[in-house]
Amino acid sequence: MTHSFDVLIAGAGPAGTTAAMGLEKSGLRVALLDKHTFPRDKICGDFVAIKGLRETFDLRPELKDHFAHYPKKVVNTSTHVYVDKYNPLRADWVTRSYTIKRIDLDNELLVQVKEAGKTEVFEGHGIKRIEQTAGGYNIESSKGLRFTAKVLIGADGAHSAVAKQLAGYKVDRKHYGGSVRAYFSGVENIDTAVNEVYMHKHVVPGYFWLFPVSENEANVGLGMHSMHITANKVDLKKLFHNFIESHPVLKKKLGNAQMEGKLEGFGLPFYSKRFTLSGEGMMLCGDAGSMIDPSTGEGILPAIHSGKIAARKAIEAFEKNDFSATFFKSYEDAVHEKFWPEMKRKAWLVNHFAHRYQFIKLGGYLCHHVPFIKRRLQKLM
Image (tube, rainbow, N blue to C red; front, side, top):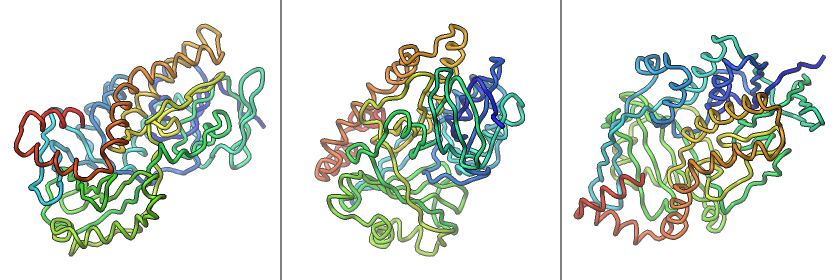
């Protein structure tokens, strides 16, 4: 038996669920597939910029109040950046953001899609094989189900089957990062409103983070550029534990804490070059399109935004009966127009300065003594 749809979305993370929400009023037959059964964990820093969630609020205004009262979150109002031996630099944010465990955030977004009843959801079905035909795509899932769709939206993460099979995507170490993350309970002396970032010669080019997810629990991780990891044979997991032991602030906060579960690793496809995001009847969103900020590792905002644009372009394609690669190039252009100028600047800074710790120390010193420089760097973040 073959399941026929107008649009098939691969991946039920923030990009995929946003695309599904954007298609709910279109009248199109939409399927949403994910290789996991929810709730499922997603290794991440868990920071959710409010301007990302606002994209979903545009599609579902009621979600603004829903997430304002959502209990499984903490509200962030500032970031403390520890550079070398200096006191932390405090960056206060005009708009509040959230820290929500991805196991909760992603499940909540999928619940919203399911409750709307406009999208047929297939959990536990990853993409195994894709065949392009004159009428669209034939797709076989990892459990043997067969689908047809006129439009295929790839939102299936950093190891996207859609990106590999249709866009020839391969990991490029020049535009990739590696990270490890664990949850700790019993963390001492933390403020749920404050995310903490540590920049030190032992962890650049990259940074160590401690993001509270409750009054005594935190998401703790370390990220670094893949080129440095490979060239210097860095063992991220070993460095993670050693850095906690060697840093006086972290040792005090985490010395009596308990690590919950395992220290797990994940890859970060950086938006430090313009990757192919579209093809005939096909669009890539979020991590599948390598849309992670090369300076911070944040990817939820571009994931949600790209999912929203993909839904709009899919609707336009059916209205115009145009599924050509030329038409869907307009999706790619819209995403790059939104994000590429900023990402290009950030990638340049990372490539030229992130590995030069003396510049980072100088920047920390200047931020403490020259308010103008602190404001400019805060704006860049």
